Length: 240
Image (cartoon, rainbow, N blue to C red):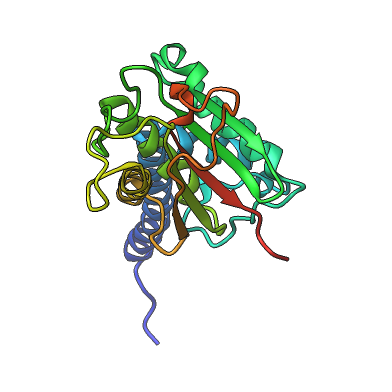
């Protein structure tokens, strides 16, 4: 067998060394590039996504106790029940408080934990707040609030019921076939559903739309109080 010249062997050894080194450098470059993309994605992501990522690294085991859009689509959202409903309430209250001009309508949004679930009341004021007076057409504030509710509730497996209520003031025309409080209460609840679904709420989550007209007043001492005109969004407890 012929011996390989020393010069050739040295060249081969040097080439082999270079072949291993560039792979390590390339792997480091790809890793750094991936980290850069993740940082850029987090910077451009919404508040809910950043909170979800931050919450996971702070507490990987307990993070999924709080459900919402941060876990939407992950398959790991936990149902809101009687033991977790207060967590959802605090999360949604904080989301509303984060709106730039929340103080302007803070007194018109009310959260209540009931036997059915978490109830969110959007109450009107004289002259209209979330809907134009006597109409199912939402105001800009109404669209923003229902849009936010759709985002916050869209990641939950819980069923949603939406109610419409009016005060006891009658429409001008009171003929049997005229548009009145019954139609208005249902139409406002359905409009809320449409906005929330377009914002991320699953259409299959909404299992009931209820129109009560003035039969379930919030301010029973004064049936004409404007706060009786409201839309209620109920997050029902998940059956175990």
